[in-house]
Length: 287
Figure 1: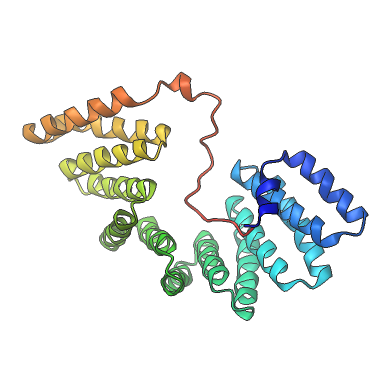
Figure 2: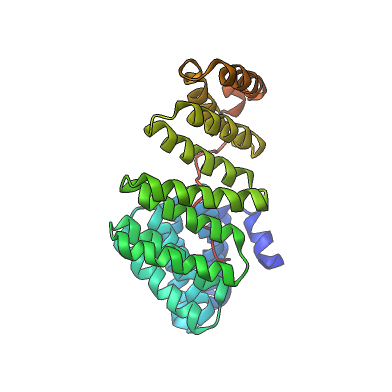
């Protein structure tokens, strides 16, 4: 991200839109496209997906007019991510596939990996399991090639989610454990928590309440460390509900940890007014 983009992100999106329109009227089309793209990213960060979609479309139109391949690629990718969040799966697949091919054409390996991952998510949303799985694995290899361990773990998690959607628990469990190992290596607390929570779900469905309670407890600890307090509260409550269904020795051990988490959690009133709705698990956005 450039210094200019950093400054833009500190401004109000409504003010930025005025600046973008003014730049467009003045003939500074490249500046306008950058501003519209930046505003789209701001809207995405607060889950205002429709507004983001419109901004990315405006940015894409200008970059297309300018024949700016790098700009077109970024805007297309961002548009695809917005469409994924709006569950516009068919449109998202088309946008992400176009972005992927353009990134590959311009030798932007990082962008190609991101677009490949987004394309897989769109295909999964369309219910095209085999193609989604194929592109998740291709994205995983692409992320490995650019040494993006966060991306590798994310793709593995979504392979696990794809299997879980089919209630194919054995491969789902395997994939979540692979992702967990990477998240531990890179010390990603939110990723660790997500993987543990999903492993807890699988253990619960398979009747292993002890393992489920252990996974949920550790997940809650990591959500706490990641300051994702609302989910930490939900997960620790699930762990607490299982205490009477597990061996006494495990119950005593987990009881202390659970009580510490509950005592440390901020009151729900303290969290009011904070925006914790946006799910940052999906993807980063091109700047």
